[in-house]
Every structure is written in C-alpha cells, then in structure tokens.
Image 1 (cartoon, helix red, strand yellow):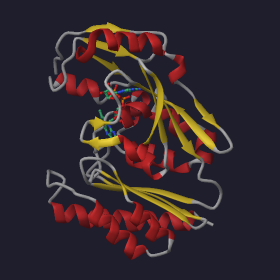
Image 2 (cartoon, helix red, strand yellow; image 1 turned 30 degrees about the vertical axis):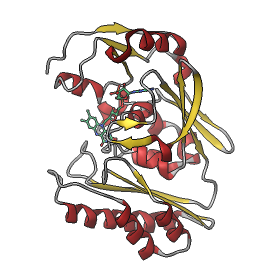
Image 3 (cartoon, protein in one colour; image 1 turned 135 degrees about the horizontal axis):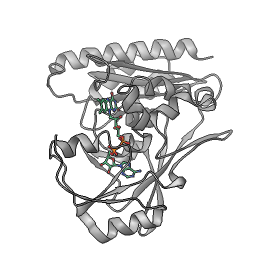
Image 4 (cartoon, helix red, strand yellow; image 1 turned 90 degrees about the vertical axis):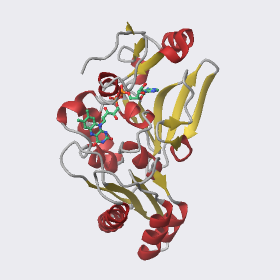
Length: 277
Ligand SMILES: Cc1cc2nc3c(=O)[nH]c(=O)nc-3n(C[C@H](O)[C@H](O)[C@H](O)COP(=O)(O)OP(=O)(O)OC[C@H]3O[C@@H](n4cnc5c(N)ncnc54)[C@H](O)[C@@H]3O)c2cc1C
C-alpha cells in the first residue's frame, strides 16, 4: 500500500518532459493516469526516484476526427473515448472496447496512451489497436518516429519504445462504411483483465483479427485475418488458435483459455459481420 519515496515533476511541454527523463535515466518514469503504475508502486514492484506527470502537457490531449484518420492524444482518458460522439461514429469499436475496461473511476483517469504503452498483455487497447492497424507516434531526444501497433509489442512489459521516448499520439485509419467491428471479452467480473478477448473488423473484402491476454503480447494474425477476409471462419479460428500461446493461471488452464478464445473469436466475427455491409 505504501510506495517508496520519489520526486514529482509536472512539465508543461514534451521537450521538458524528455529533458527530465534524460537527466535521471532509469530513475525516472512518466506517469499518465497512474492506474497501472501506482498499483505497481504500492506493491513496490516499481520503484523510481522521479515521476514525470504528463497531465499538464496540452499537446498530448484531444481527439481529432479526420475523413481518413482519427488521432488520439496519448493523455485522452477512457472516459473521453466513451463519451466522444464523433469517435463513436467514426470507429465504434473503440467505445465498445473502452466500456469493457476496468470501471468508471479507473476510466476517468486511465489514458489510452498509458494503456497501450504499459506493455501488460492483459490491457485491452493494444490488441484493439493492432486490429485497427493503428500507428503510435513517439518523441524522444533524437526526434519523432512512428511505430505500427502490430510491431510495437515485444514481450510482457517490453515494447519498441525507448526509455526516453514519450508516446504522444495514436493514429488510426478510419475503417469506413461497410466494415463491421466488434470486441468480445470474457472476464470473471467487472474490472478484470480478459480470460480471452477478440477484436474483429470485417467487410468490403477485408478483415482483421487480434486477441488479448492469450500470449505475452497481443496477437494479430495475418493468416487468421486473410482466412476471415475469404469468408473462412473455421480457418480463421484455427489460424488464430495456432498463433496464441496462453499460460495457465488463476483464469484457467491452457485448454480452457483456448476454448474461450475460440468462443470469443466466433462471437466477435458473428457480431462484426452482422454490422457490416
Ligand atoms: C481496478 C482496475 C481494473 C483495470 N481493468 C483493466 C481492464 O479490464 N483492461 C485494461 O486494459 N486495463 C485495465 N486496467 C488498467 C487501466 O486501464 C490503466 O489505467 C491503464 O492500463 C494504464 O493507463 P494509465 O493512464 O493509468 O497509465 P499509467 O499507470 O500512468 O502508466 C502505465 C505505464 O505506461 C507508461 N506510460 C504512460 N503514458 C505514457 C506515455 N504517454 N508515453 C510513454 N509511456 C507512458 C508509464 O510510464 C507506465 O509504465 C485496470 C486498472 C485498475 C486499477
């Protein structure tokens, strides 16, 4: 319950935040909503001398809806994702998934950037962003670069982000009319991480499928996506089951998780198809 002591920083712009990260190296960590980081600090599983709060940086805020692309500031909260009407119209999948994350209080402060940067395979947004083929914008001491969500996750808590880089925005191609979307999540109770969850987009001859909490990273499968684009649902499920690699834990043994994964995927496909066209 009691975190170790730390120094608190509240920079007003990205350059200052990066300067603090550079100055303190491994000793510093950015904090967004704090609803993954603070629980870890309270358990003393994360200890750092300097916390760099991103709340005062306006460049990290705001939802922009373009004709082809949606841009989410890293500090946009889950609550903002849910209540933004333009976003619900452009990419309904995001609201549907955000409503299945945590609980109202966590969603008031938990951010989309924190959810995707965290690197916990239990987080729901990473698989969702892979399904949507999102791109993450990172800014560090050497400038800015973009990394595809599908290339970002390396292992549990290891991502393509360097320690001194800040995730600034998430860019998502608008799927467009005729593309059905669905997020199906099986969990033990409200606020639980998924036993298995599936994000699906399908329509206009295209398809994309990603799974949550069934490996040490989110899993997007090209062959599962291609099978679904061809209308081969069984082939899609088979391909996805060979791509995931769940481990037994208090959510169940491996065989159970594979079973639930297949059920979630089939349900998500069915619902996405019913919304397509
Ligand atoms: C009770 C409870 C239930 C939850 N249930 C779920 C759930 O069902 N599904 C789910 O997905 N999540 C769940 N969460 C996690 C919650 O959604 C977190 O808030 C979220 O994962 C992290 O977002 P945050 O803004 O709180 O990030 P923080 O906790 O502030 O940060 C998390 C990590 O990301 C890094 N980080 C944050 N922002 C940036 C950035 N812009 N650039 C670089 N690094 C950054 C931080 O340094 C830290 O390492 C739950 C949390 C709680 C407390």
